[in-house]
Image (cartoon, rainbow, N blue to C red; front, side):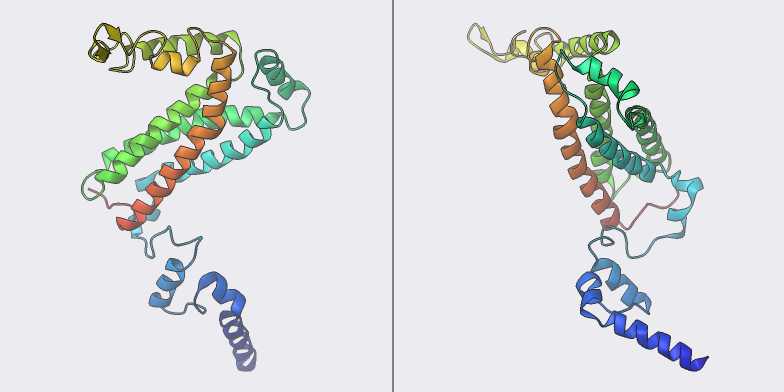
Length: 265
């Protein structure tokens, strides 16, 4: 038995000292706490996580796992969204029929339902995550910056949901976006009916009016049309996901830098 154990240890030692292992983990087989910390810090897949976790950080009753579930749903939505892009054309002529074909003609058309319900679930998990952070006081110093990043991520989640709502191009989507963008007219300084818009003027010329405010920029015109559909498609599939990934990376990095998940109050 001892010879077998020695043989196994020698195999592990050889593996730990091999060029392949060191190119990935930058160290040998970790055997002590210090070596394990170096292995985590030196690995591209593990370095975003704290080298050590407090006991409460792995308790479901404390964390609710809402942050992890939100990230998991984002990955699911990214994968299903990429698959849906192969079958969807963002034009007035084809958008609605492509959605119908996804459910009736296209193989694995269930991806659209997974994407739809996953989007609803992500909005819920992000809100619950923010509630948990607030109730446990995890927004307090030194985590104010990461709380602000979380608020931005929650806003991006709502914007992703809103821009994706128009893509089926049915009556419910068109009128929902019409109502939503009409509210943008009252945006301070950016909407022509909002407070401060009249201040942005050169002499008698208003810089913010119905053909230059934020609503016009979102719709690509005065009414919901093909330009609106294309803009929402680009925002939903490219712009907002890319921005969200950047802020998620910052969010995870700050969790690590702040010492992991904060303790109970």
